[in-house]
Amino acid sequence: MFDVIVIGAGPAGMMAAGRSSELGSKTLLLEKTDSSGKKLLLSGNSRCNITNSCENVEDFINNFSESGKFLRNAFSVFFNKELLRFFRKRGLDFKIEPSGKVFPITNKADDVLRILIKYMKDSGCNILYRKEVLDIIKKDDFFEITTKDNSAYNAKKVILATGGLSYPQTGSTGFGFHIAKKLGHAVIDPKPGLTGIILKNNFLKEWQGVSFEDARISVYADDKLIHKDSGEMIFTHFGISGPVMLHMSAIIYEALDSGKRVFLLIDFKPDVNHHELEILFNEEFKNNPAKKISNAMKEFVPARLVKRILESAHMDLDKKSAQVSKEERKVLLEKIKGFKMIVQSVRPIQEAMVTCGGVSVKEIDPKTMESKIVKGLYFAGEVIDIDGRTGGYNLQAAFSTGWVAGGIE
Ligand SMILES: Cc1cc2nc3c(=O)[nH]c(=O)nc-3n(C[C@H](O)[C@H](O)[C@H](O)COP(=O)(O)OP(=O)(O)OC[C@H]3O[C@@H](n4cnc5c(N)ncnc54)[C@H](O)[C@@H]3O)c2cc1C
Image 1 (cartoon, helix red, strand yellow):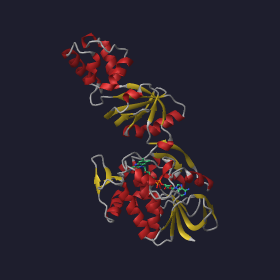
Image 2: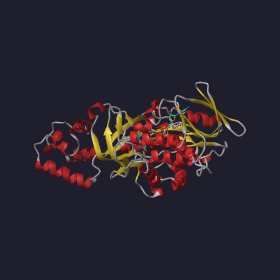
Image 3: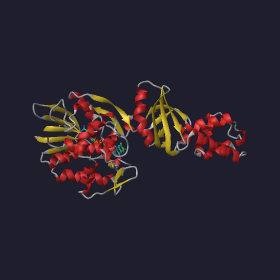
Image 4: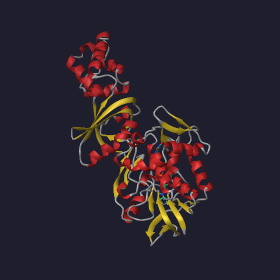
C-alpha cells in the first residue's frame, strides 16, 4: 500500500510526486510512456518558458481564462519566486526576456527536466514507466489502480496529473477526463486552446511566411465585433498563427462552435491611424506619380501581400499612382487598416498548445487540490479546467498545483 500514487510524469505529476515523497509519504509515480516530461521537453521550442516574471498574483491570473481565479490559493503558497528558487537551489539559473518570459539560462528544457527527476529520486519516490493506468477504483479508504499490463497498486491518496488532450504523442490523451467523469466529476468539454486559425482565403500559399511584429486583429462573429487584440502574427499554409492568434483561438473556437460565421479584420498598420495613413498615401502618390500602384503599395505592406490587396480592391496592378482616384485610395486604405479574412476553423485539439476545459474547478478544493466529491482523490496540472496564455503561465500552473497536491494537509 502506498501513501500516494501520482498518475502522469508531466511537470505537475513530477512536482507532486517529489513534494509528496519529500514530505515523507511513500510515493509511487506511474507514467504510461517510457520517460518523464515529454511535453515539458517541447515547451518553449525546447527552451522551456518555465514561468512569467509578473510579480502581482492578480495580474498573473488575468492571463488565464475565467477559471484562473482557482489558482489564487496555489499561487499564494508556491508562485514564480518559489518556483525559481526551487530550481536555483538545485543549480539552475534563469533569464528574463523583456516580455517577462522566464527561461533557463542554458536555454534547455532538458535541464529543467533533469532537476525534477533528481528531485523525485533524491526524495525517495518510486517511478515506474510504461505503466498506463486504465482504471481507478475507490475502495473504503483506499484506491485500487490497475494498469494495462494487468498490475494493480493500492494507495490512500491518488493524484491525477495526466494532462489534457493536446499533443497526444507526448502521452496526454484525455485519460484524466474519462476517469474523473467515471468517479463522478463534472468535466468541462475539452476544446483547443493556443492554436492556429484556418482561413478560407485561397491565396494563403502566396502569403505563407509573411509575418508582422505588430498587427491588430478584430474578430467578428455574425458581423458583431467580439474581440480585439494586437501582437505578433504569421501567415501559414493553413491560415494564421503567432502569439496574438494563439491567444484568440479559444474565443474563435467558441464562436464557430455555436454556429456563428467568423471573420477577421487585420490592421497591417496599427501604428498609424486612418488619417495619418492617408497623409502618407498622399505624399507617396504625389512624390512618385509615375510609379505603378503595385510598387507604391510596397511602401506600406510587405511586397507579397500587394497583389491580393490590390485585387481585393478591384484595382489594376499596373495603374500609375497619379491615376489612382481619391475613392480608390480610400478603398486601399480600408484594406490595409482592415483586411477581411474568413475563418474556416481552428487547428485540431491535438495540435493545440493547451487544452481548454477539463475537470471543473468548482469540484476541487483550491487549497489542497483534493476532490470535493471523492475523498483522497487529487488533481494537478492541465487535467484541471485551467488554461493560460503563452508566456510561461501554463507551466507555472502545473508546478503550483502539483506542489500543493503533493503537500500534506
Ligand atoms: C509544443 C508545446 C509547447 C509548450 N510550451 C510551453 C511553455 O514554453 N511554457 C508554458 O508555460 N507552457 C507551455 N506549454 C504547455 C505546457 O507544456 C503544459 O501546460 C504542461 O505540460 C501541462 O503539464 P501536466 O503535467 O499537467 O501535463 P503533461 O505535461 O501533458 O503530462 C501528463 C503526463 O501524464 C501521462 N499520462 C497520461 N495518461 C496516463 C495514464 N493513463 N497512465 C499513466 N500516465 C498517463 C502522460 O504520458 C504525460 O507524461 C506547451 C505545450 C506544448 C504542446
